[in-house]
Length: 68
Image 1 (cartoon, rainbow, N blue to C red):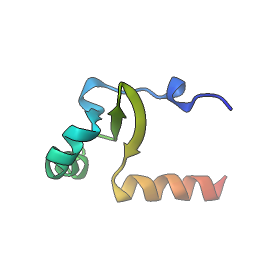
Image 2: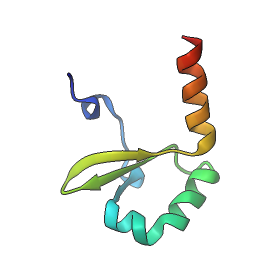
Image 3: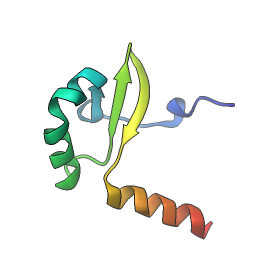
Image 4: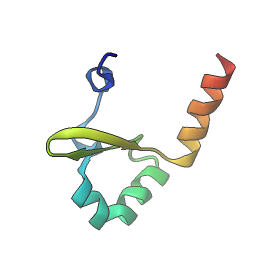
C-alpha cells in the first residue's frame, strides 16, 4: 500500500502536534469552523498521524465518495 501522506498537501498553519492539539483544541476547532483552516494534520514524533476535519467537510467527503 502506498503512503497517503506523500500525496497530502499541508501548510504550516495546518500542522499541530498531538500535545499542542490537546492544549489548543478549542482554538483549532474555532479555526476550522471559521473556515480559516480546511484541515488540521496531527503529528507525533515528526510523523503525520491523523487529520482533523469539520463535520461539514467530512460530510462532503462522505457524500462525494458515495456518489462515485
